[in-house]
Amino acid sequence: MFDINRRRAGGTGAFRRWAVPVSVAAIVMAAGGGAIAKAAHAAESGGRGPNEYGMTMGSHAGHSSSFTYTHGFYCDTHVAAASTTGCEAGEAAEVAPAKHVDPLFITVPLGFTAKGLDCPDKLTCVDHPMNLDMTRLAAALAPVYKTTPEKLTPALRNFTTPGHDHFIGTKAEGKAEWWDVRVVGVTDPATYRAVQQHRSWTYLHGLIKAKNKHVVGPIPTNMFLFFAAR
Image (tube, rainbow, N blue to C red; front, side, top):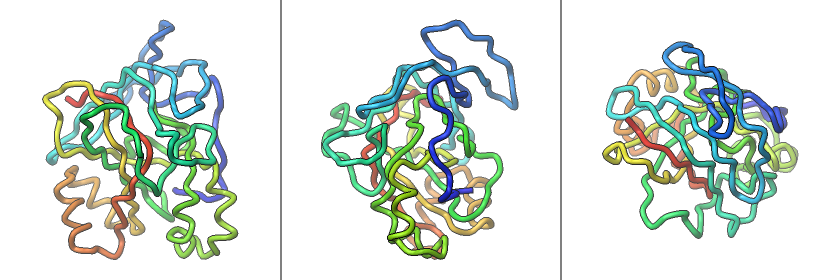
């Protein structure tokens, strides 16, 4: 669940789902089709994350896709952000880390708990930022949590990255590249389950185009992730 009372979890040495640090040896255990290992003891700051090696799952064209990460996140610091990572949601980046990027759509359940997320709540996926500034979304999120933007804003300044799923419209021929993160919020459990079952950006885009009342976005961010999709 996207909980407005949560704060940054972990810190250095925190566990990250599917994470295998490049700089240290790790024993990887199979767990539901993936692997879990201890993350690197490196701090996140200044818009860049530590380089780690690991995997997450995602969705493409109705099927599961594996994402292999080899580079820490990039958040454009030309865009103001109150988070310690320099990452935010609500405003697009001004300077991208590469000339060519493809969009990565992440769906976030709002106001309820969803099962089977690619990146679960309270765990930070490999090469993802641990927190982000979401104050630009305070007015939109306030009605969901039955509060006011003014009361909600302090909790959003350095908010722990919420649990989410990944959707892509291309695999970029399996090549590692930078992906531009765009957020899609979903406020209804049944709608979210349908999105997960279809495993398709085309289906998700159809909901957005039809102006489904339970789907909001895509919301721009200043965040980019680096991975190869297979």
